Length: 616
Image (tube, rainbow, N blue to C red; front, top):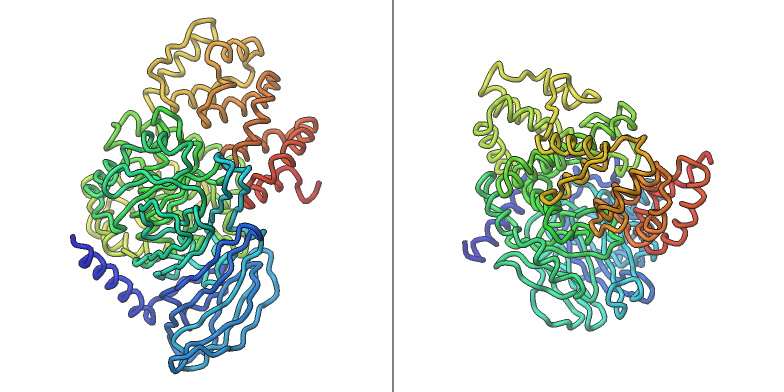
C-alpha cells in the first residue's frame, strides 16, 4: 500500500474516533481527572527541549479541543509539573487564560483545570518537568556504556505520562501527536513515532504519530544511539556496544510480523523498530507503537529469550490496536498479548517450545496466586484509587492467556482464530472495557456456537478469584525429561544439557528441592558455572536459590547483579527473598542504597516497599 493510502487510512481511523466520541460510552477511570464526556483532546503537538543539565523537559503541549457539550473547562492530569502559563487559540491568535492546579494526591497527582471558554479551538500549556519525574529516568554519562554522553528515557505506563506531559492520562482516550524535540547535537532523540534512520544528529527532531494511541503509549528517549536495519521495516536503535548483538539476537522479528499478520490481520503501524535501553530499564519491554523499548537482559546470545520480542510485537494487535479502557481491564491488553505471543512462538519455533513457555508461565501464575489476596486474582480487578501498578502481576497476563486457551480448546482453533481476527478488525484503534468485550463475545462467538461455553463460565473466568476447576493446566514433555535428569543428577549422575534452552534451565533450577545439600549446590555450580552465567534469566533463578540456601560463593555475584540490573522482574524477587531474614535484610539494604542512584523511579518504589515496609 502506498504511503499516501496508508496515511488516509490512519486519518480516517482518527476521524472516526473523533466523530463518534459524543456517542462513546467513556470508561469510568478512577485513575484520571479527565472528563472525556465533556471535552477530549484528539491531537497533541509537543515542543520540548531535553535539558540534561537540569534533568528536565521544558516546553509546550498544545491540544486540539473536541467538545461534547457546553463545558467551558478542560480537565488534565499532572504530577510534579511546573505550569508556567496556559493559552487559548481564539480568532487566529493566542490569548492567555486562567488555570488552576488542585491538591496533590499520592496516586493521581494534581488535577489541572483550564478555562477554555466557548469558542477556543486549541489550548497550549507552557510547562517543565521535575528532575524526579516518575515517568522519566536521567542517566549521567558514567551510567551509560559509552561513558561519554547522557541518556534519558520514559516509561509512561500505566499513569506516568502525566509526570512529563500535562495530559488526559487515561487509556480511554485516543490521540495522535506530533513533536519537535531539541537536544544537544550528537545525541539522537526518538519517540513512539516515525523515527528517522538517518545518521544525522542535528539536535532537532520532528516526529509524528498519525495513528490514534492511548497516552501511556507516548514514549521518548535520547542518547548516544546508533541505528542498524534488520529488514525494510525493522531496525534496532542502541548504544554501539550492544547494537550488533541485538541485531543478531532479534533477526527473526520480520518473520514474526509475517506470521502474526497471517493469523490476525495486517500490521497497521508501518514500521516495527526496537530500542535497546540501559540495564536500569524497569521492565522487560514496553510496547510503544513503532518503537518497542527493550531491556538488554534478554540479549542472551542464543535467541532463547526472543519470546519477549514476540510479546511486545503482539501488542501491535492486542493492546496498541485494541486497548483496555481502564486499568481494571488490563487483562484485555496483557492476556490477549500473552496468548498471541505464544501463538507466534509456536508458528516460528514449534509446539514444543511454545508449550514450555506456556508451562513456565503457568508455574509463575500459581506462585503469584499463592501470595496475592483473592481479590487480586480476579481478571476484571477492583482497584479503586489504588495505584494501577498494583494490577501488574501474572494474573492479567497468564490467567488472561489461559482464559483464551480455554476458549480455543472449546471452540476449536480455526473458529477461535477467525473470531480474534474479526475482533482486532472491529475494535481497531479503540479502547474497550471488559463489559464491551463480554457483549462482543456473546454476540460473535457464544451465540453463533450455542451450548459450548456459557456466560456463567465466562463470568467465572473474569470475575471470580483464582482459576476455574476446569482451567487448562499446561505441562511440557520437555520439562518431564528435565525432571528425570534432575533425579538422576541428585543421585550422583550427570546432566545432558547440550540441547537445553533457557527454558529447560529455568525449570531445572526452579524445581530443585529446597533441601538440596550444600555439597550438591557446589557441585552444580562447579559443573555448569551458574554463578557466573551471563544469561540474566538463568542467573536470576540461581541467585534466588542461592539466597534461600545461604550459598555464600554466589554472594558477590548477587551484589553485582543487583548493582547492574534494574529490571523489576529480576531484582524484586531477589530483594523479596533477602527481606525474609534479618541478616539478609540488612545486607540487602546496604546493596540497595548503592544501587538506588542507577535504578528507575519505578524500581525504587517497588523495592523500597519490600525493604522498608511502612510498619517497620
